[in-house]
Image (cartoon, rainbow, N blue to C red; front, side, top):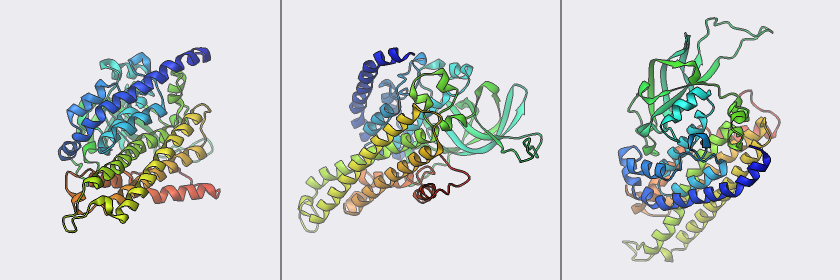
Length: 410
């Protein structure tokens, strides 16, 4: 697409983005209504998945050639903020599905054609930690092992798993005699080839269905093998195949913002719910209304400001990620900063819902209370490796002092 064509297309893209947000607003109340069922069943209800699919939200980042919208990070974030209030699990899983649809486009074209043959989105988990072993065979690889954190298994049609390619020469070295690092790749297959394990019993984010997956001598043809290395700096082959800035976006910041946007939406939803609850709440013992409590008033005020701040920081982070996608390769300093910014936003959300739950009395801990569910969900989600506050802040401090670690998750 030429610059002139892109300029002409911008109004249409903006109208489409606004339309998707309106569609998301239309289904958000039903998603909230089914949040208790989602947590109880440890999976997103089929009705919710269909609502999101029918609204065309999963394919925000998918190229138009496959029937997608070919939009970008900001549009993805705007949708995720809207559908996540009172059900962080649904927003989280939807964000991962969106990123995984983006990841399929980093495969060779033959694989893309296979995956999108049935429609403009292909749902399923991608497990990034390289815990499986891959042995080269004729025409591809055979993989074996077990992977954790397989978010989105309940409605999967495809699957990806990161693994290490076993070399025939365990002592492989470079030309200068230094040991070569292991080759890590993502191996993609139909979900029917994977073996899910019922392991996801958690205090929060229960509906994400992030069970373990076992891979038992699964054959992966060469065209379904992905090297995510170049995508970390926005230099994936997909950036050449598709002109939209979404495909020159750095992988880790994209994953981080897709994961933190639902937490912001959920925390903001909890803060608004707490205000409405306070208007109706009457203490069993004192007979006083919640609106008459100065302590509660202050908690609600702080939570409101914290979630507003998280929303503002989220939008600014989206702007920064988009800006970087126009100037590849994206340097490690920018990527590391964006990761810690996402971590900070997640911490704000966690602190806000903690403030709310501590000031909402015992009834807020009932199983059907959105406040306690949001509290547990966000506390669990904010422990994700990308957000884990202490190592994230340590990394940021090291970068500020000019002492970057040898390995940086960014």
